[in-house]
Structure formats: structure tokens, C-alpha cells
Length: 165
Image: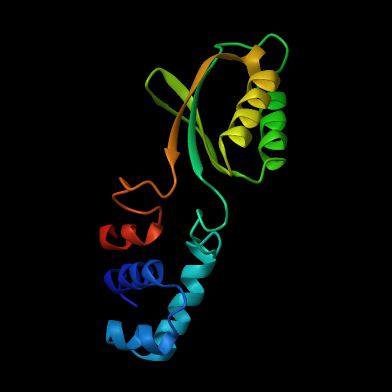
């Protein structure tokens, strides 16, 4: 399949990964075996995982938090490798964290994106973060999003990227 069609297939899969190969073949104007072969290649090379994006509010989540942190330039207590190992373990033990990475902006160099049932669970999360990581942090701040707010302009969904591919 030509690169342009391959990207179009990825785009269609982002919009709805449940579409059959036959439906995708019809949309792309290629044969179903071509789509099946290409989908297998895409799944091997480009797709990390399949998942759903639920209605978080209906599942009881009311807060999405973007926690930005500034790490200290050097930590006397942990080596870089030890810090990475501890970080991965800390994050792995908190299934409400959906993304965490280094980055840059607003004077910060680390971000955590997490979901919380209510303000109390968010507060507990922040307290644990401060207690566990305080010695390694210069500071941190959070931006809270009220899930289901009447001012939500676009729901959290990756399907919107489909039109950018």
C-alpha cells in the first residue's frame, strides 16, 4: 500500500478502530486483503495498544489534573538511574496516572496527567506526590479540569488527530 493510503488507513483506524477490514477497504478504494495485510503491518510497527476512551464522568471521575513539576538540578540522594526506577515504580502503583514524561514549559520540566474521582482523591494524590518527591522537587503546580463542565469545548479523544495525519 502506498504511503498516502497507509496514513489514510491509520487515520480511519483512529476514528474508529472497530471498523472491519472490508469497511476500510471500501473507504480507501483497495481490496480487503490489502487492508488486512497493511493493518497487520501497522499494528506491528505503529500501534502500541488498543483501548477505549470512556465517558469518564459516568465512570465516576470528575477531575483531570495536569501536574507540572520542576525537578532539582541534582539530587544528592539518588542517581539518575535510581531516580528513573523509583519514578516508574511510583507511577506504576497509581493507575489513575495516564501519562507522565519530561518536557519543558512554564518553568517546569515534568508533567503528570491523572484522573480523580473527586477533590478529596486529588488532594490525597498531591499529598503523596509532595511527600514522596518533595526532596527531589523545586516546586510543582496543578491545573485541574472539571470533567463534564458546561464549558468543555471538545471531549478528550484521540480521534481528532485522524484529520491531522
